[in-house]
Length: 108
Length: 149
Ligand SMILES: Nc1ncnc2c1ncn2[C@@H]1O[C@H](COP(=O)(O)OP(=O)(O)OP(=O)(O)O)[C@@H](O)[C@H]1O
Ligand SMILES: [Mg+2]
Image (cartoon, rainbow over all chains, first blue to last red):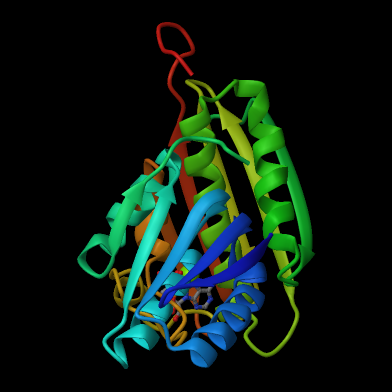
């Protein structure tokens, strides 16, 4: 599990990878937040194409970043969401907060 | 009389967060003998992750304690999973199970029980403040015939 960060024209892209649970969420959060605070982007894209598993700790991760970005009117986009994570994302009502773009199954 | 399980496994481990993925993998490996679908397995793994994480984050908030995970297989392809801790317990279980309720602060969504409830077929929570909590959940697996992966 890990994250690769990339800044491009006011957009910060966080390429997530592996299994997102409580154990790994903290390190992800710290890395993303450090970059967000440094760059204050207009858009934070969380790219889920490499994510194989996620539980409610991942939902907390998305919601927490949404709150942080809202401080300066920035937005969060959840991109390339694998079909198997749809159920959790719907249950959590993530679409009411962020743009969610569905992806294909199993890249990673 | 209760019907006895066809097969059973039990593991216990300390409430270290590295054991969240171990618990998911252990249940998935045991459930493999029922040949569950990819979706069923994904539901079970997620529910187990929620229950075990709750022991680590809430039951043993400032300490390390023992978590016991028991998985039983019953007639009719029923998978029954029990996650037990001897941690702080829950004062008001009904309230704790309401979606979005959390005592975990900013980074928790308050969705763990809602996930267990919707991803499994049955969920039962018993708790004694100061003594611990037991979460029992059941998944009825579909027959393998007539469905794709
Ligand atoms: N094993 C447990 N021991 C003690 N308290 C618990 C236990 N499990 C749950 N709780 C209590 O129930 C509340 C709700 O749990 P739930 O899993 O639904 O949400 P959460 O853990 O707070 O957030 P999330 O699961 O979305 O990260 C917790 O905030 C906690 O107060
Ligand atoms: Mg929880």
